[in-house]
Image (cartoon, rainbow, N blue to C red; front, side, top):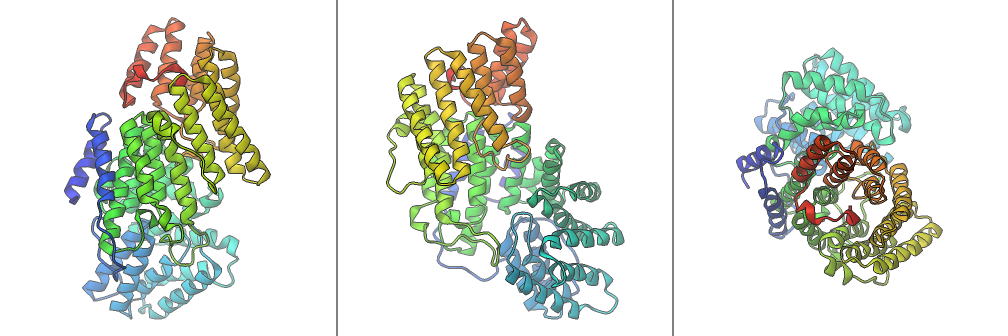
Length: 566
């Protein structure tokens, strides 16, 4: 699709409800487009990509071609196209071996980022490039000297590993103050200040926000600054402040998958779930287009952020009640994450400190996809059976999906059987020291227990089960730290609100619904419970307003989503 078409789609999605029913078709179309990309025949050397960012910064070169590749590297670096950025910087350095900043770019691309660390061996390689860059600095070029010295400090043998990110962030912040108005230095500095957040150190976030506000005041369409501003506001606890920028990022960088995706971080926090689903479907299509252009080997999911985009988009579709799009995501798992790739290699940058196991990625995608079948294709969910060697988390989700399917049929006994199966797997996971699986299984088991209790008109039991699940979810996966995407697909507290309503406690139902909406705003099913509770409490005006919001947010027929399945 041409850049203009991407921009048009982004503009349409910028206004809630503007796309209407076409949003589903748009999302399905993006995923189908990803599936139709031509097979790859082996990697090409560096290829100039388009639509990956709009930054430009002068390098110390007279070669127009080297300058072009240097700018390409910077844009790809800020777009988190890690491998492509390294290839672009290397191309620039090869075109002009005397360019200090081109060599600095090579060193920059070899370092840790907001999303991953690197090994000591890779740090040593990065230092060798930084040292080479220092030798190439032209007399009097204090700007180049400054950014290169910051990398030498970051990678230096005298800098303790635990301090590298902090020391580097401080060094880059000093350069921001020395070179006010230099957007490139500012953007590099911001990522440096945000990197410690990977370890829950948010001390650099306020300064990063301040720098970004200055950059965006000068250039409101700076793609790198918008990318980092979305992250910074999310870390700072006020993600909605980035919404005006998130709305336009896909249109500004339609060829950068991660930048297309980035709006989903903000949109998830503000409750625009259908847009999350469509934006991430678009990101999958962009990933596929880039893979085809560069002839990368492996399936679609071999790209590092493909799973991230997939699970984020699926979560959005499920929360929006878009059954058709959720099922398309679910079916896409088998296409993008085939078992034939279990022994393949995910395109992680060289030297990263963490690995990406294709089997684990396939398991995650397959497991989460099963929720869509349980909710929107019960016959398919009930046809699922455990297979020898299946990971416990996959079995948990399979039985959970079957339980949801039985619930749609009103079969409380079937729901209870699946809940018991989930509990048994939770016990296995506990003995095997799999805490993440234990958490998911505990939540899933109690959700199914609550569903069964509502079906048999035992709301008090449902309240107990949903309360346990909600408390477990909020302790294990607090919204502030776990919306990237959410590890469990919906806020269980809305089910607790529904159970309170069924128990004849509208005041309790309203309280729990509001508590759920505080973390998951504009959740249509929670809004509907709140509306019903307010109606019983005699507040017709509030009830009507919340019902209108619920109908606007829900992609299906809200009247066909029973209280028992809230």
